[in-house]
Image 1: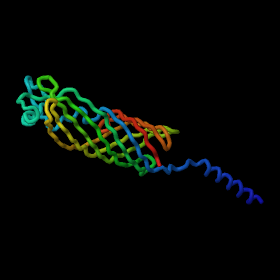
Image 2: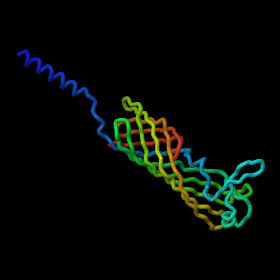
Image 3: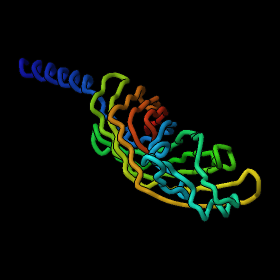
Image 4: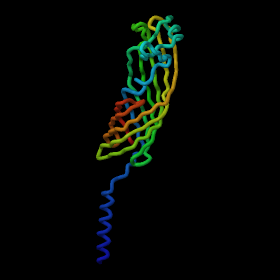
Amino acid sequence: MFLLALSVVCNAYAQKIRVQEPKKNTNKNEFSLSYGYVTRDNFLTNPVRFVKVYKLNDSLRYDMRKADAYKLFGTDKSVGYGSFRSSGALFGSYRRNLLQWLSVGLTAGVEKETKDLLIGGAKAGLCTRYVVTIAPELQARYYHKGLTTMYGAFGLGNSFVSEQYTSLTSDKHIDATDNYAGFQISPIGIKVGRKLNGFGEIGFGYKGMVQLGISYKY
């Protein structure tokens, strides 16, 4: 009788422990959409058809290649660039959990930039630039409580550049392409939610210094 009562108590206790155990996260896949601003390309990369020119007192500027300037504008004068505008970077990403704290995935995105072309300080044309980036990424989570998760992310891939230079006074244009290694380092990321999440990241690279987005786990 005593053994039977002991068996019932132990079984009930075991059931209680199983109920209190946290459920394992079965949502191993995640898809996200994000928008970033102030990317690496905004201030570290210059138009393909421009070269470094050292002027008086060793000051540095970038001028359009002479042959391209003559082809586009029919002038031997220096062609520089002026104001810069960016659409920001739009990215889609897929990730899969390898461990409870680590996921690996792939991201792809695009950014549009425009730069004014100047002759003697006056606007004479426009450079339109598209940057497409594809990169594998790692995401490591270092804090989780309730609905809040903090993480860091790193990506390394390739950025493909397509440019078109146009004149404001004619229908002439010049096309150019380039590519370079693209990277993203985001040491601070905050995600809030369960299956559907909102997130923000601070870092540097192809996604920008500030990035906001939404993600869905399944």
